Image 1 (cartoon, rainbow, N blue to C red):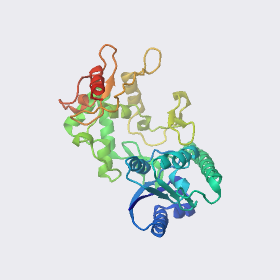
Image 2: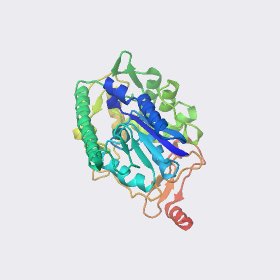
Image 3: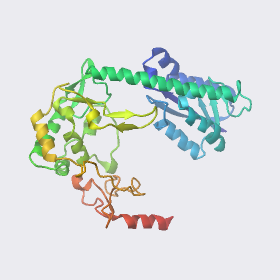
Image 4: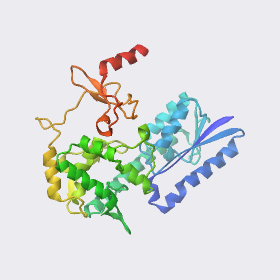
Length: 374
């Protein structure tokens, strides 16, 4: 019994071309792979993994992550894809998996359209032909990325809102997905946040009041409108001070649209925030929820999170950061390095009102416990 995994991927770039969308559709890829498996295997167990709407320039995809975890656990014997570009468009990464990782894990890799089967010693056209195809996919992806980025930049300069998600308090206008209009039920919450901040409430105090009053969080509004689905950590959704801070400093609420905040140095890489003086602002882009005078007054009262040198403080990262969780609410613990007594704590306890959230876990002690167990 051969355990076979079919992997399928459809990117947003493919969807913009009707011919490619039909050719690379999840349905088409599934039919092609299943037909190949049926013709070449007798006894098999079929598994499916897919990423719909994800780029192939990196492996930050839920479907491929789940697939590779099954490979690591030894639960897959063979992987079948429509072509190499469905699995990855990164020339180096693809080569590493096909020529090193999968052979080491004893996993057979088949690309149907490329007529590639890692079990066959002599491939049609030789290994040089395969590597050349990898390189072409990689170059095509980089060229496509540049074209898409240029197209989006032009739309932003024209004042078109192109993001798929709307800021809390707004929604897409009916008949015009490039324009924001106020969602009044959400906007009432935004106005209350600014009113309380202007009255002297801190972000943690606002979050605590909202949790006590049972005011719905942004994700709950989205779920009620059918725009999202998510299970809450700790059993319930709660307001946090970080959520309040993000709303209070967002200029979208005075009608401005900011773009050009991030840049990606290479295709498939991570976004890097640019200096504020390089950001581009489209003033009075949409109807404001908050008056500009109120917004500026709140910013002045809240001050800046920078130190006297004008730079943000960067704390030393503890090896257990991101690996310790609060037993009460399930949130990842925050590390605070005060030199004398570094410790972990649950930042949600100030806002949620949950008295059992972790208040102080000695960082040295936590590290020693883990080392002792190891």
